[in-house]
Length: 333
Ligand SMILES: [Zn+2]
Image (cartoon, rainbow, N blue to C red; front, top):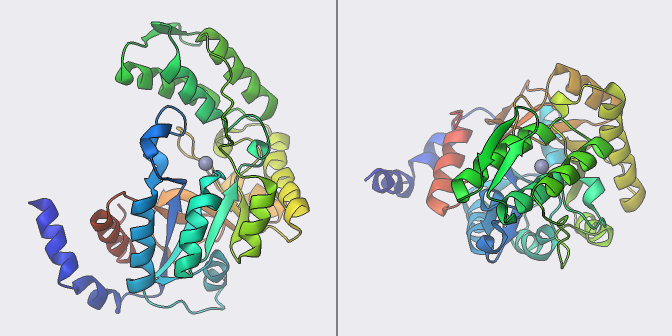
């Protein structure tokens, strides 16, 4: 019934009429992975951050037909006061740097003329290992052990079904999320040893290559940084490590694509908050001019460009249009 009501409201066209009178704003969409068969990756990427290629194509077709896609550079100009945005403005972003962003999402975006921003977790590019949270998911979902002993709080977690495995995974992710670089590598490797699984090395590659990243940039899309090793930046206590994650990732991308990188995206693994006044200061010092977060909401004039809100993207087309319209109307979903 609820779905029927939503369908009726969407089909009567009232959103388009009402959104004409909303003060200038933009909804920034947050995608990760787009795949033909998401369930093939439920033990690695996790279906929670995958959209099917069919869903994504339908959503982009809707954006091109009923909304006005803008770039992150347009959002920056809007926030700095220099550019008016069209009504129903929407920006598309991708986190992490999955290879499907190039192979599946980019052709669809290009077909509909939609600019997007792709944020890269640099240490996973041309590395045998994907980001740490994927290695952990693989370890906890494929281990043949019947339980896992959390060494920190000495609590035993069963690994008998998908629910108990997920509880254990969440706990392990909470422990690894504040870690970066070498400390993170060691912690993940130790957990893989405890679970008696080999380090996950995807074949074929799961993440973008530098050549693919250059091709995405050459097609007119934006490449931004998503740190080096994908920690929760608000929990990284060591200032030198915080700076290194922001500055070195920026420098490495610039070296590979040959253009300045001014856009950053905060990872948000497991723990909250995932950004703070302190991380904003470091982000500014590192030379970024925008930073997108996972905090929900639309972007309005006066917002800090280094703490841009984004919208989590539902799977179905109806729910997508419903959430997008309400987000532009200012409701936090
Ligand atoms: Zn991420």
